[in-house]
Every structure is written in structure tokens, then in C-alpha cells.
Image (cartoon, rainbow, N blue to C red; front, side, top):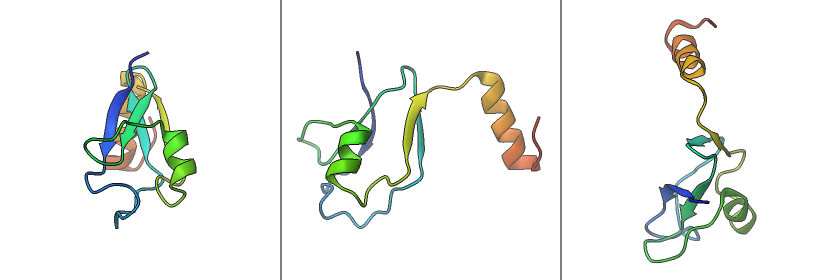
Length: 83
């Protein structure tokens, strides 16, 4: 199974001042890799969250939604109503 790269923290995950939380990541196959530096191997979201408990709190990874779902999300964001 091919994992898709979604986030690279170039300075590493131990010393980042970024706050990454409550994100929804969507990829073709519902899998994603997160990188704590440019030369380190990637890890899954579950491993990242358990190793660095302050990163990606509440974040999820899932397969790409349907086109109809994405259009409905956009309409809700722009117009404030559900289709």
C-alpha cells in the first residue's frame, strides 16, 4: 500500500512551534505519512499522535470524499447552508 505524504515538519517534531490539530486529511487511499524532518522516515498519523502528543490532536485521515460531498462542503462554507 502506498502512503501519501501530507505533512513535513522540516525542523523536526520535537521542537516545532506550530500547532497542528483538528485537521482532516484526505488521500486517494485513506493513508498518509507525516515526516519529522527531511531525512527521517515518515510515520502514520497514529504513530505521530502517540509519539508527539501535542501534535495533530483530534486530526484524522480518510479516503477522498465524493465530488458531491466536496461540493456540499464548499456550499456550506460559502453560503452557510447544507445542500
